[in-house]
Image (cartoon, rainbow, N blue to C red; front, side, top):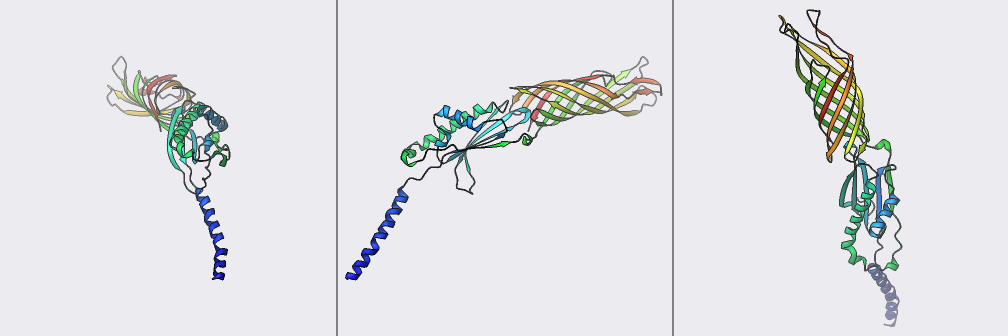
Length: 330
């Protein structure tokens, strides 16, 4: 019995130690992971350090003081030269596990720089929302056990060459002068690509028949269908934008004889260099109303004649148009 008692005395202390250590491990407060801020934006658009300081001024505490949550800022250009901010609040996950989005806020502004203040305010609101439900649990952690939260800011700049192209479309009524015999109303369709202040546009225009008659009541009826390829510069100021464009126009001008013995229809190519200026007013996140005026200097001016000699119509040396409509971005 003595030998057995001694063996038990030598075995119990290690077991007790293991149990005590395990109890301390379970009971010890888990070190909280400070919040991280990731900024994905074009270069020189937003300073992550300045953004973090602005948040401190708004809420009185640094971003890293909130445990087990991350913030992601994404800034990208939109159609009509606007900029969109997306602020995501993310639940922290172990390495290799995709983060879950807890909340999202989106804002728009006329320039990338304008979104810096809006981003700080959005993060401040999110910080208050995160702190409110967790305030009681956070008070059970002894401050002495936690190391001071270090800034966890990571900036991911997007080079200028990575700014995405965005598509757009427009519909307008247009009035043309100088190509057809008289002032002609028509319809204009546009498809464009936008990148910053640059726009590449393709347009198609259709104008109904215009008649012209001489003193003998003979003449012709003419129609025009043309297309434009333009490059534009569009600086933006708040809800307004101005545009300056230049490019080429090519069209099909068709004429049919009127009040003649044997009327025929003939078509010919019309071509011109085109320049225009316009103004647009945003009426929604991706919609704007516009007004544009342009001039065209033809380098192809077909002549339409009767009986091989009687001139019926020829486009003017200078043409103009005025268009008003709506454009949408995608």
